[in-house]
Image (cartoon, rainbow, N blue to C red):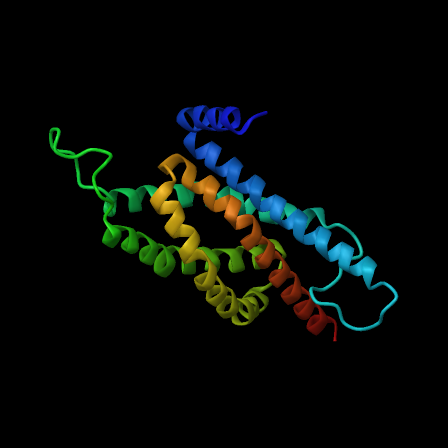
Length: 216
């Protein structure tokens, strides 16, 4: 199937069921990222099977389906939320002036100030909230108690948000500038495959540490 045909199918589904389409798209790509992360960990474990030193990221001895389902569930929940956030940014910070008669058209200049406000708002508001929801929801879905969830926040949040601010401003600049509104969540989710891969490995390291502390 060509990319054009796929885009047409997506657009038709988005027009008919926008919330469901965003949820399924984001959930599927989040699951894909964790599948890649676990595959890398399994490969790493087999590669270093004969060694006794600590492997980073932590190795797996089997594929964890429930872990992928947790990432899928988080992606499904976040897709519509990100879609609404993008819609808010679209209306709050228009890149081009509102059309008045024939004065303005698609050729009018893009406001770099409005574009900067979109990126800044996204990184200072949605990024910290989204990361906080990720850490908390993963802890709860893993069955951890309040102390365990707090420890995940203490260990994961700061490194992850710093890494986020190193990567996502450029990706979101491209997203907000060039992608039509219906395609911003898929674009973000596609870029997010690599980001979710990072979060998956970071979460796996933290799980190994917490589980090790609990059994000591």
